Image 1 (cartoon, rainbow, N blue to C red):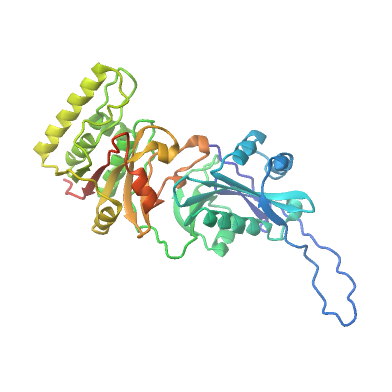
Image 2 (image 1 turned 180 degrees about the vertical axis):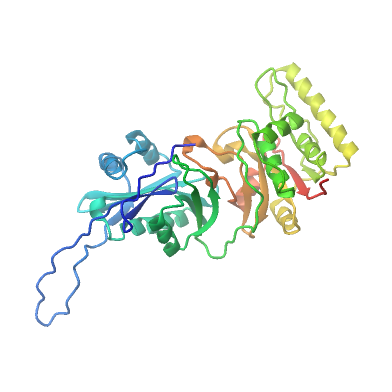
Amino acid sequence: MPTLRVAPVQNPLCLLSFFAGGPKSRRTIPFRREQPTAIPGQVPVRRDEPAPPRIRAAESADLDALERLEHLVFPTDRLSRRSFRRFLQRPSDALLVAEEDGAVIGYALLLFRERTALARLYSVAVDPKAGRRGIGRLLLDAAEAAAVERGCVFIRLEVRADNAPALALYAGAGYRQFGRYVGYYQDQMDALRFEKRLVAQVRPPVNPPPYFEQTLDFTCGPACLVMILGWADPRIRLDRTLELKLWREATTIFMTSGLGGCEPFGLAVTLARRGLKPELYLSHPGPYFLDGVRSDEKRTVMRLTQQEFRGEAATLGIPVRGSALGAAELSRRFDEGAVAIVLVSGYRMFRKKAPHWVLAHGHDGRHIFIHDPWVEDEDFETPAAATNLPIPVAEFERMARYGRDQLRATILIRKGSFT
């Protein structure tokens, strides 16, 4: 995870700055201009505040100003010039600046997850000399407008629990707290997670399963199992020990050429062993994930392992449906209280050609909501970017398939009994 930047609050009237959604505060200086002499017969116009600055997309010519502003506002954990250049070049980011009299006096950085309806406020900074003029709110409003233009229905961020000015700003802008990270910042201060609905008709699922981030590149399936076990039994401790134990039980990949992942039968059997009631929906019978395996020995081991899991699934009475489960039917099952592990294209999710498992758990009629166990550190993501993630239904249908044979695999789970 990236190091979070936090500047100390210097007075209770400070304007706000944010990093990874976590605000930093700075001192502000009042700004007034002399009021001109009124012309007789003319209605006086108040001019004790300057006109609002121009909000526009940042350009490469702004790099010097952005770097200067970053050093002016933040004493530590500053974004580098290289980072700003990267954000300018990436189409999945929106870097906005506030410009006044040809000078950049503030910026807002908004990050998007491609093919999702979620935006994250990553950083906002305002020149202290432009304080108490509402520029932070202008940038916040501009960031929200940019998110809506991208088709986003939610915007999220994190904020220090002791940053009263930031909490007041969010309350005034319509944000609601939906979670807390204990000891999140470098000084062990908690982070409060905030979210705002940008489209009134969209409502996220109530009481979603707990979220767990995969700790290794190949444990997306076991991480989904961890979340399901926590959903089924809140007494279970969700940690890396459990993740690796489930991986050992469910993996099907031969180990001589890298560490391995999981296919649907292994995941379903692992759940059934723990008292849950999985059902398998598969577009073809398998074996799975052999296309990119060049070693004959490895392919043989994978086939035998999958055959063993298939036999155990039959012994455990796991239903196997020979058809795909589409978004509409999946949504109906959510309404009945089920959740699902769904195979998706890693390329459509994060530009990596690999099978990937996510936990789908709710819908609003236009979006499927998922927990994605993968958090992209290189993109400065936090778990807030992968939790309760809204995917437009049409995009979900496109991403919920993998490989040349367009494999569609869903493991539907209903709660069983725990002893």
